[in-house]
Amino acid sequence: MSKYILPENDIIRTANWISNFLIREGYHIDYTLQSLKEIDKFFKEKINKILENDDNNRNFIFAIAAYIGEIIKMNFDGKWSISREIDLDDEAIGIDFKNHKTIYPLNITLELIQKQYTLEQYIKEHFNTYI
Figure 1: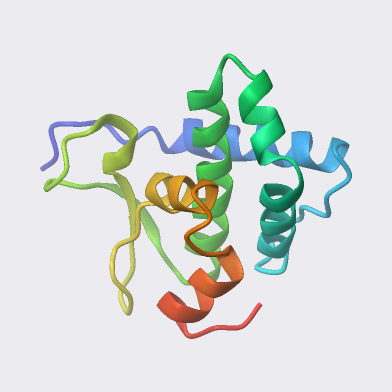
Figure 2: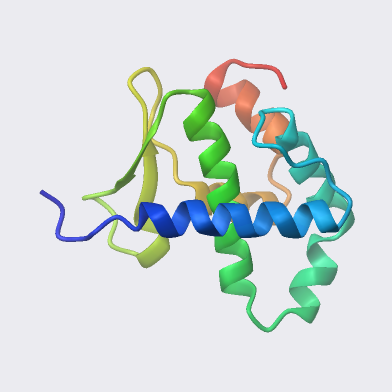
């Protein structure tokens, strides 16, 4: 048993907050896999400007990670978990799957910021699914 309590309600609440923010910004966010293309679009158009102007970057990044994770979890039958192998705050929050490797949405989000890939590429590579 993990020594941590998984804040799943907080994750869902945070995902809802960022989805409302993105809708107000003009993005089509609706908890579908296709909405991950909108996250890619947001990263391309606005993420750098927002990170430059926001004093609360950590919470903003976590919120985006929560939305990305919730979409992937819902579409690929995942379950939020806390890794027993990682002891690094939010980075320990992952999603376990029966038919796929565990993923860590915060790490995915940080790699998106660094432009290592798009969500469209990530989903294709890790879940063999086109969006």
